[in-house]
Image 1 (cartoon, rainbow, N blue to C red):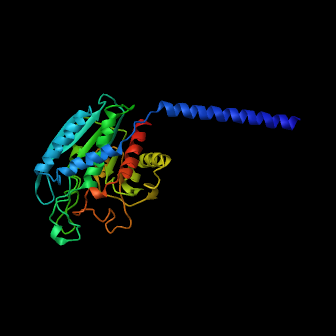
Image 2 (image 1 turned 180 degrees about the vertical axis):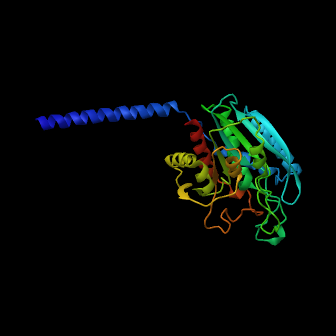
Image 3 (image 1 turned 90 degrees about the horizontal axis):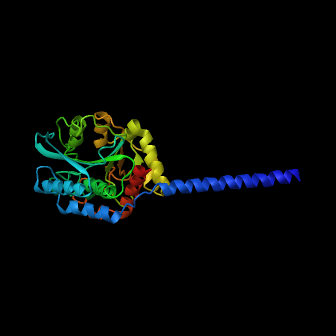
Length: 323
C-alpha cells in the first residue's frame, strides 16, 4: 500500500506541475501579442519599387523611389531622416546618394536596427548575354525584397509598438561595386551608403543593441545560412534569430549550417559603427555565383519573389522584435 500511495502521490504532483507549467506558458503567449506580418503587403511594396525601374544613383527612377520610401515611412508614423551625401564610386563617378532612416519610438534608449539596401546595380555584369552587360538591374530580389519586408514591418510598427525602439535604414549605393573585369583598386567599392552612415550616424552617440540586415530575401525556396561575418561579430544574434525561425516552422529556409563571409552592409556597421549585426542573405550553393542564376542579370524580376519566403522572413523578425 505504501508503494501504491507514493506512486499515486507522484502522479498527482507531476500532473499538477505540468498543468501549472502549461498554464504559465499559455499566459506568456497571451501577454506577447505579435502583430501579423502580411506577405501580400510586402509583395506590393516590392512591386511598387520595381515599377520605378532600376534605382541606380543619379537617375530619375532613383530620385522618385527615394521620395516614395520616405513618404511611406512617414505615413507609418516614423521620424524620418534623409541623409544625403556625395559618394565617389570606384570609377570616379560622384553618386548623389541618400540613406533613408525611419525611427520608431525615438525616445527609447533600448533600440534595434533593421536595414537593407534600396539601390540597384547599374550593369548586369553576370548576365549570360554579353549584350546585356551594360543594362541596369531591375533588382526585384537584390534590393527591393529586403526593403519590401521592412516597409511591411514599419507599417505594423506604426500600429503596434514593441518594448524597444526600432530604427529602419534603407542604405544607398550598396550595389555600385566594381565589376570583376575592373583592374584597378576595388577595395571597399561596395556598400558606400552604409560606410558613410557608419562614420556619420544620423544621431550623435547613436547606439543599438544589435542590427539585422536583409538582402535578397524573396526568392522561392530561398535558403539562409549562418554567414561568417555575422557569426564573428554577433553569433548570439544569429542563434536567436535562427532559433525563433525554426520554432516558427521555417527551418527549411533558416538552415542550421554555416557559410563563408559576404561583403555586405553589415560588415561596416559591425566594423565601423560597432553595432553587432547579422546578415540574412540568400545563398544558393548550387548556383555558379552563390546567389541565384538571376543575380546581377536582367532576369532579377518579380518572377523571383515568393510570398511564402517573404512571410518566413517577415514573421520571424516580428517575433524577434516583440519577444
